[in-house]
Length: 177
Length: 187
Image (cartoon, rainbow over all chains, first blue to last red; front, top):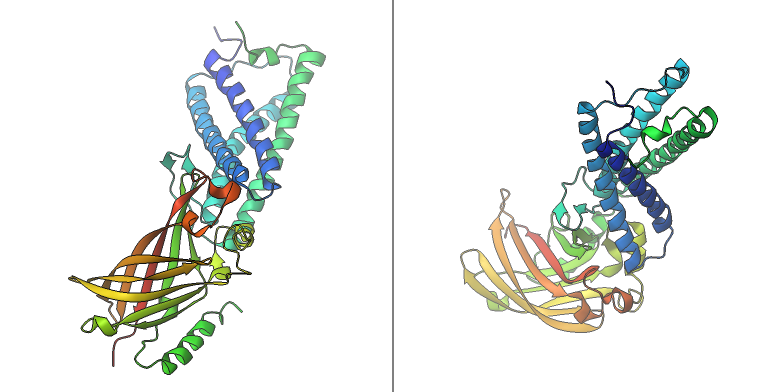
């Protein structure tokens, strides 16, 4: 028989990723406007570490999902909604990989290597170039706003399933039991 | 505009070299003054875009050899324009008051092989310190002499980045300076 809910591992990874993305996104918005200060340096480092963690988590989630398929959607769901669900989840996974990578490559282009948790030096993906850096920063920001838009739809859809359709879709991902 | 920038110091060098007897015009475009500063556990490299050098290096007559450098501190190349603006401020370089750093050699010693030691006085933000810089001199394919050296300074000893920036866990006290000077073949 097919499972009606996501596995405990999948749910734990989902909510951990959600928390980290929320913090990383908020920190990103907050830190860029700060005065030059040691605190700002720390926030930038933390922001990068959160991003790399999200990348690793996403890789782990995809690997887990390959062996543990998502539980089925309600049979009554209209096919356009099923297609929209598949497309938005694919986009979320793609962005959770692409956004940390775009931040990493941007950091490289400014001449600042990423050292994960202050311990693991990651290779520079591109040489230092100020013009390239400006473009890469724009790419990093744009991908983040795109993610914010899709996450908004993701949350709105989950709430609609829960409170309007009452079809148990959200329950597949909620913690507990 | 960018194309012409390297020629300005080169021209200054030619003028300086012709006025100082015996001095070799350092090939500025091939030479560099870089540094590495550790920030939040990350080695971040920078360099100075503008500096002058007056070098008279005679391996067989080290007593007559000398090396003088004048570095335009505001010409620093860092990760971002924001940090370049910041480092010119009083709590860092204070370039309005101390626009240049200088190094004046006082002695040179043969360490054997291609290795030498250049002793001298480094003046930075009003503080003078004695430095000993080990260098290695090699010939490149074109017959130029290429001198490379590395030494470490403590930024806090020069009051660079004090106050809230004094915490070495954010910006380390040690700054590694790497110098590469290319001198044209003699004659």
